[in-house]
Each structure stands twice: as structure tokens, then as C-alpha cells.
Length: 151
Image: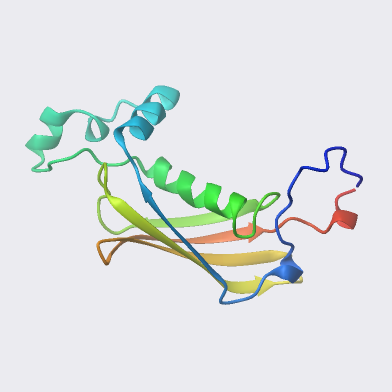
């Protein structure tokens, strides 16, 4: 395939990845992101925005929608590990604790398995808040195919 736009950056292929490779980032999900999500999806779950409801549950802050956590995971895979051109084929996301607005979260990605026969990488993600695991995920990713395989 001859790419017309030479500025397009493609991520690493299955042969470029190494089991045990890691990538980490920190994110804080703020009110702006939650409001954008609610507006885009028309999700009216009071757990995400209604303080009276939240107080009745004994909580002090709104809960972050699961879709936003999923979005951080998928965008990180698509930007960094393996990078642009990756295709996520399966996700298992486990929320151990509620994640609240303005929590500082550390997302720790690790490639735990590479299957060169199927062109798939398994990535484990641990999400931590103040040294406490609040979520984890297992993602099966097809890295970008080599240029000659794109036709």
C-alpha cells in the first residue's frame, strides 16, 4: 500500500512488540469530560451528575462513567502501545472500586502475551488510585499489519 500522506504515523507491528513491555500514564477525569460524555450519549444516570442522589448514597462526588475509563484504555492503545493502526478485538474490564470525578488515576499497561500466528497481543492494564487497585482490564489487540499486508 502506498500511503498518500507521508505524515501518517503507523504503530508497531506484532514483530516489533516484546512480552513484558510496559507503558504508563496518569489521568484525572474532570467535570468537563463527564459533561461531554453525558451530552454525547444522552446518558442521564444520576450517579454521574446529580449531587442530591449521590449524597443519598453516602458518596461525596459523582462516579465516572465506565465508558470514560474504557475510552482512556482504547485511546492509549491506539496512540502508544502498539499505536496507530491497532485494532482492539476483545476487552474485559473489571471495576473493583468506584472511580470518582477528579481522582488521579495511574494506568499501567503491560504486554503479557504475543501470538505471532494470529497477529494478536494481549495487554494487561492495572488502574490505580493512591496505591489502591480500582480496576483492571485485559485487552486483545491486533497491532498494525506490516505495510505489505495492507493491500
